[in-house]
View 1: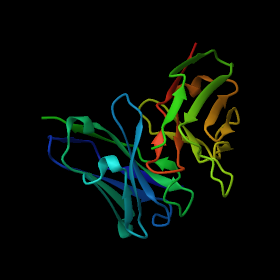
View 2: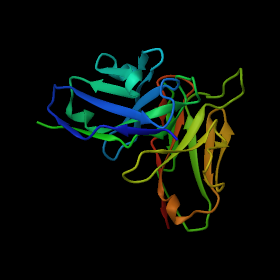
View 3: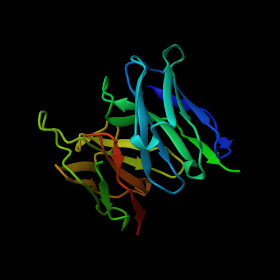
Length: 122
Length: 113
C-alpha cells in the first residue's frame, strides 16, 4: 500500500521561496502521476499542478504558472513542489497525492500525503 | 474553467437519517467517447487530508462503507449517505477531472443535528 510522506512545516517571508517534498513508499512511484493541491486555512481545495515522474513532464494551473515548479526524483521516489515569490495569501496546507487511474495525468487522488503547512509571515 | 458548485454549505442530519449532498458543474463532465462522468467525491475530517470515497461519479472505492453512494450524470451529481453515523461528520468535496484546471466544489459540512 503506497504511502506519501511530506516534509515538515515551514515559515517563510514574503517574496521568498519554499520547497516541499513528498516521498512515496510501499509502491511503484514512477508509473503514477503526482499532483499537488493546496488548502488555505478554513478554505477549500485548489489544484496546483501535476508531474509524471517517468516522463519528467509537469503541467501547472495557469494561476500558478511562473511561480510553481514541480519536479521528481525517481531514484528517491520523491516529488517536490517549489513555490516562489511567496505572498501572505500563499499560507496554506500543501498536499501531494497520487493521481489515479494508473498512467493517467489527470484523475482522482489517492492516497494523499499528510500535508505541509506553509506559513508566509514577515 | 469548470466551476463546481456544491449545496448546501452545511447539512445537519440526525443519526441514522439520510444525508444528500449536491454538486453541479458549469459544463458537462460526461465524456462522449467512454460515457463516463469525470467526477469524484472526497471526505475530509479536521486535521486530515481528503479521503477518496467515489470516482467515476458512482464507483465506490474499496473499503468505503456501502452507505455512501454517488449518482448523477452530465452536470448534476449527488452524494448520499443512507444512514448517517457519527464518524461521517466531515466536509465533503466533489471534484471534476474532465478538464484542466481540475476544480473542486466549495465543500459541504455534514454535522449531527
